Structures are given as C-alpha cells and as structure tokens.
Length: 339
Image (cartoon, rainbow, N blue to C red; front, top):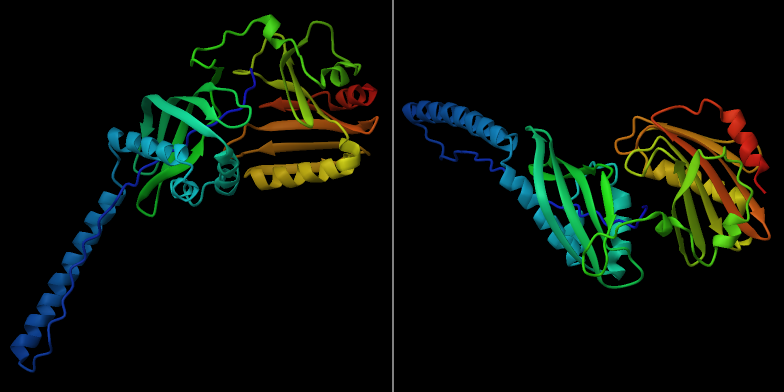
C-alpha cells in the first residue's frame, strides 16, 4: 500500500576535542633563556603535532553503537517538538536532500505526531560512515488527514565537522498502515478497490493493458488531485521493476496545462536528484527521462504523456527501475491511445 510516510531522521552530536598547547613566554636577552625558549617551542610544536594527531584520531574514531542510537533518538525529539532549526542542525551539510528536507519538515509542522523508534541495529560502521536500520511508528495526534504507519528503513550517518549527522535515508523496505490503536491494518483485495470523488474520471479512461498482467496496487486522492498506481501481478510495492501510474487534476488544464506540468516536472527532478538526469520533452504532450547513479533513487527510466480532457489534466506515466525500457515506441503508442 502506498501511504503517506514520515521518516524520522535523527542524530546526536559526536564531539571531538582538539587540545592545543601554546607558549607565550616573554623575551629574555639571556642566551640561555633564548635557547630554553627555542627548546620549549620545539617541544610545544611536537606536543601540538601529537595533540592534533590525537584529536584527528578521536574525530575519525569508529563510534560506539550507543552513540549512534543516541543520534537517532535526539533527532526524533527535535522532530516531535517541531523544532525546525534544531532538526536541520542534525542533517549533514553536504546531504543531497538538505534543501528538500527543510521544505518537507516545514510542511509537517501542521501536524502533531506521536513517534516511537525501536529495533535499532547498526548494520555497518567505520570511521567515515555508519548505517543504522530502524523501525518507527508514527501516529497522528492532531492535524489534517494522515495515515498512521510503521516504517522499516535505514539511515546513513557521516561525520560533519566533527559531528555525526544524517547524510541520507534509504528507501523504506516496508511501510505498514496502522489503525488508531496502532495495530497493523491487514490489507485484502477489497481494500485495494478504488473509491473516491475522482475515481470515475480515472476509470473512464481506456487503458491498453495486456489482460492479466497488471493490477491496481493503490489509489489515493486529496482535494484537487488523485493517483492510481498499477504493478505487474507478480510484484508488490516492496519489490517491483515496473510502475504504471495515472495522475488526475480536476481543472488542471486551466490551472497549469500540459506544457506547464512538463516544465514543473523537469524543474522538480533537477532540484531533487543528484545523479545523472537526462530529461527530454518529446512530441507535444510527451516527456521522457532517465536517472542513474543517484545517491538515493534507484536507476530508472520513464516515458509519460500529459493531456487535457474536459478541462481536467491527466498524466500517464510508465516507469522502469534498474532496467531500460526495451519497448519504448510500443509504450508511446499505448499512451497515445488512452482517451
């Protein structure tokens, strides 16, 4: 199930101390004193080198598990208290998601959330990087519509000016919807059945699927938009290689239009990715892109069509992950046939 997720990115400062010895002895005309000062300066220089070496060793030391766990707990506290500045202080300054993380966390300020972190495991660690797997429950206390959830994932920490901070968060391996009591909601085939204000507009489209190959995996809608996602019948959201999705925006043609959507898509991808992105506006209403070697996202390729119908805007996307689109011309023809 594709649910709204709040990933707790957390940290505590790993402090390195640098001890520097220095000397400010007054000048002395006595040659013996001068020699003594020269000797002292030499000794102090040696001491400085030793202390700096010790400081460097301390800075680059492999952290204890408890230190890394404290990192996550401290950051979670900043998140639950909606302390944006304190939260951003926990993010690595060179993280590819630094700017977008600030925007996302700022948007979450409309919620009061109860979050709990558990089952922390240090998967690997070195002087330069540590990976910690986690489980986290996120329950809404107050705010707009929100899906309570239990998230399983991993955070990557790196030292940043002597402090261990979150550099990236891996794609969650599992996101489980929870009821108001914190119990996992067991999904059945009936649960996937799409219901909502906009569902008729989506189901009215003629979709050129091969019989029995695709099935609706999730459907979500909010005020002014809806999203239906289809996966191959033998795949699920924890392990999939192809995705077919339909975005629907009522009155979207008037508000943005196909050309405006494509421009916005290219801008968002450029800002939010760090890998090799190739984006092209193909024939009218079509765009395609490929993304490789991104710090966070899987390698992927996509071909998509944006079109208007009765002043509403539809975006039909076919995406592959960790493989190329072998039959791109065929998919372009399929997208053209959707009316």
